[in-house]
Amino acid sequence: MNSKFSNHDQVGLVSTFDELIHIGFQGPMNAICWNRNLVGDFKEIVAKLQLRENVTDIAREELLALSLTPAGAMARETILNDLQLLTDLGALPVLNLLKSYERDEELDFISTDVYSYHVDRSPIAADTFLCTYYGAASEMIPNDQVEQKVLIPEIRQKLQDLYDGPAAEFEDFLKDYSFDLHYQPKPHAHPLNLGVGHLWKLAVDHPEQQVLPCVHRAPIENDGEYRLLLIC
Image (cartoon, rainbow, N blue to C red; front, side, top):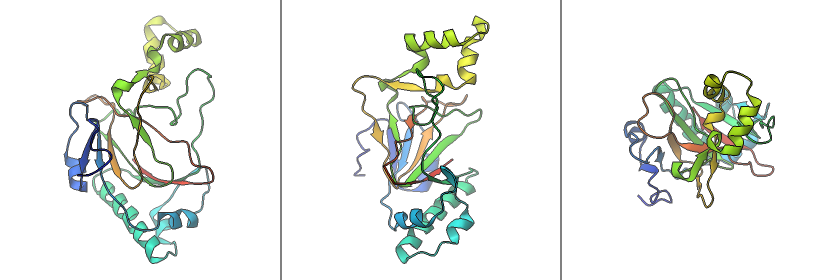
């Protein structure tokens, strides 16, 4: 399969949804991509949807109510089909029209918002699915090109200064506030842009996971442009 993702050990490439679901992660591969070139006018959908909050959940009924050109209708059909495929799988996909996510600016030495490289955590065996239909696309980065922020000495010291509980419970504190989920790229790291239109399955940190969780982040949005994103 000819794709810009072909040369990345971290990425498995598939050409159907069935393969996306049934092919498992192994070794350094903790992201699987249903590589697609979507047809239709997704920009038209973005232009006709109503942004009610910075991150607005778009219901299926709202999508169906749009009056669209044939190209817009093709794009809508793709989105509805993706939502249905994931729902049939037992997932809870959400379609977001997105201006920006909330920023975490409480501490000046560590951030826990989604613009920071992070991994997802789940108490059960689950994967993260996402697809950017329009706008800036998410990024991921190989695990050997990042360092867990709570292990960086100066950050760890500042967190210890912030913490006022028993030393034996410091690691629980890091976990409770999600500090341990965030990573800093090493010098000369090479992030990978996930592109528009591809449906991704990313490995999550959970007790049964056999591979390292996928480190990823939300992009900085393009000026004056919303994102249209499926995620679950």
